[in-house]
Image (cartoon, rainbow, N blue to C red; front, side, top):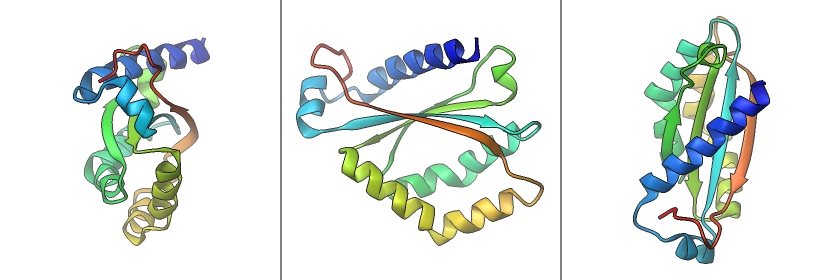
Length: 142
C-alpha cells in the first residue's frame, strides 16, 4: 500500500513539476540533458516537523548554492504518510551536474553544521528514496 501511495505521489509531483517548469519544451529539455530527481523522505517517528523546518530554513538555500533547482516540496494529505513523509523534486542541467551537486552539498560545511545541529535529539530520516527522470519526447513538461 505504501509503495502504491509513493508511486502515486511521484506521478503527481511529475505533473506539478511539468506545470512549474513552464518555459522549456520537453524536447528542448531532453536535448540539453536536463534531469529531474524525485526524492521521498520517510522521517523517524515524531521528526517530520523538524525535517520540514530544516528544509524550510536551511536545506533549500544550500541546494541552490550547489546548482540544484528547487522545483517543489510536498507533504501527503492522508495518513499514515502525512505523519512521516516529505516528497520533493530537484532539477539539474544533466545527470553529471546532479552527481557533482550532491558531492558538493554533502561536503558543504554549512550543511554539515545544520545537519549536526538539527539531529542533536536524534536522526530525522529513516529512509530516503531517489528517482532520476528525463522528460519524454511527447511530454507536456515545459
